Image (cartoon, rainbow, N blue to C red; front, side):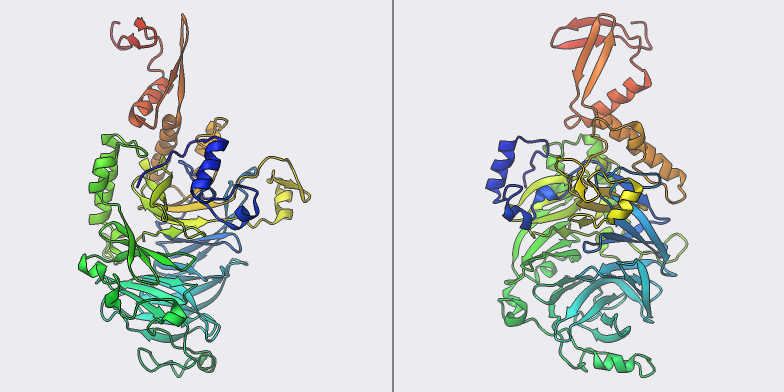
Length: 587
């Protein structure tokens, strides 16, 4: 994959790029209906970050209602409201995202979060065996279900179309069982045993093809029908408790899923899995740790434990392309464009990758590790995501979040490339489209510069409200990227740069240290020019931070500390070299 320059391009260059990629010009009727990679934020620095008390495990978004939901290791679920990106912040409010509500949802840790396809309801899975359901529009907890099960880290909503009923599929922690729960009757509908004794690692629903993709530790990939028959099957099904108060409603709304996919109902073109590459992971002795289904339903991407991303064609079950994210690949390319890392910086990031592979569970699909106290802790899960057009795939990597054109197999941009020096992003959530804003509330806050009393405040082109929300390895913050980069903004003040990190939870010493380092590093590495004031006039210097980030960082740091003050130049060769003496020496 070749990288592309994410810098500012001319109008002709942008038009030519759109023609090459079959992307319509802005303002056209086709452009309003089509999503393209320019709508995905590509900032090198995050706009704002918010905190949980403990490490954040999962993040999901409701595009319909404009909310972001996060869950952390201490069982807390938080709701965040999306804001207009170029709105003016007020006291206690940051651009892009603001805190709304917090729930102490589970006595144990958060295992998984999931929203239904419409974005109306959210479900949290706890290690305490509880399922909790939330109405997103009112950010309120509605019902809960004590399952009495040891629940795993995989959860996915689906719709049994034959019954027009929503359901939640949740994996078991220590077996291959998949529990099917109804949020409407608050009951267990069915237990699937498609994976035998091998623990399920991923669940993902293909809305357009009405089927579920599930994987396990053996490397098996199963596609099963979610259409649902009218009656509960006795095979692979647990009986509903006769003492359940919801028995009558459950019987009336029950259904059975898990049958083999068909060509007519689920859009597959193969008769046997032996004709596909769905057994390829078994042959490679690996397994899936993350799955993303394209919104079009034509393909799904699998991030595997061998650090390769494989994209499968849904109809044929064949692998379309494989992207290699192993360290041995970066060993040869880390210093080249578009990464531009020096050996010291790359060595630091490579060490983090090895730590994640050896002692963490990010690359092990959520097995439950033991803490120093012997208790079980919920692992962070790596996640990937397609954009709404199904063309671009977002993958967290050691260089930032890659945005890959899956049609041309080309790297089109890297999100958070500068902040990836301090943070290893592991989860990504694309909140596309405009923020759902209460206009009266915004006017009351006087925080909106886009409109006033329903009219345009100015004729300038509005900035897209699309956000990329990321989680970082072993961090209790969520990092929000927008189309506005606060660090690279030439008019950004020191206060704006330092206020990127919201302290909505009690900080630890490590939190403050990391925040200060990130702020200082961002300021130093973003510098592009320097001016030396001398007794003979000013000397203007251009800095190339992308080529030699460590050198520029050191230079800017010394300059701000006053290290170069009163230094004598004893040799100047015009257009070539300036040579000075040691400021701590004699000359």
